[in-house]
Length: 296
Image (cartoon, rainbow, N blue to C red; front, top):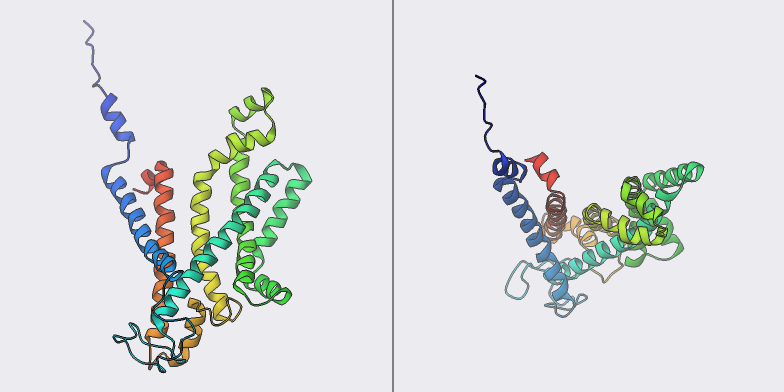
């Protein structure tokens, strides 16, 4: 007599195996929450600076290089300006630079990336080579060219950073759009008579936005670092704007006697970049659970 071997019921067990474990979900939540807290503190500081600061940014009545105290929470710089006021103003400039650069990169990069994805033959090769040249072009050199054509302002720095980052965004968008265009539902949509603009708006962009959002979050952190570097070299926001990069440049000569002038903007710069990167990491794991399962 043939023995019948019954296989165990694998429905719930298999379904639970496909779901990410509690530890993976918890890790994603901790990463995203930590990033939101770190970047949220800097954002709150920037928002408050729009309406209130302890002193005027150009107030030099505090005395040179005074230590932290009741009147000046972090002390003053070599010109007698309140350091905490400078930090608040610098946080607003950092956020403005990051958001402005990302906005320029998103508009220019998505437009160029979609056009490159639809291109064929020699036009596709030309656009790809053009993107490679833009990516290889140094942001600092581009900023110098724009500053020479305009002036050393925050707007010039944001424009230079945004244009430099748009090439990176365009390359990512080109790859994502080409992947979407190869799907069967795009062919079905074209067969049914749907126009290309409606396909882009209804099918392409909704399918690439999770990866695009993560990439733009990473570009925000890079833009903040780039603006600080440009301000350190005198190519960013001019005085009396207290960019973190300019604060670092002005405080390097007095670091041994008043280290707070260099440590405070450096710490906030690191916290903001780490926070934004953690947010991007958490968003990637949340929007693409498969990534989280591979990493766990």
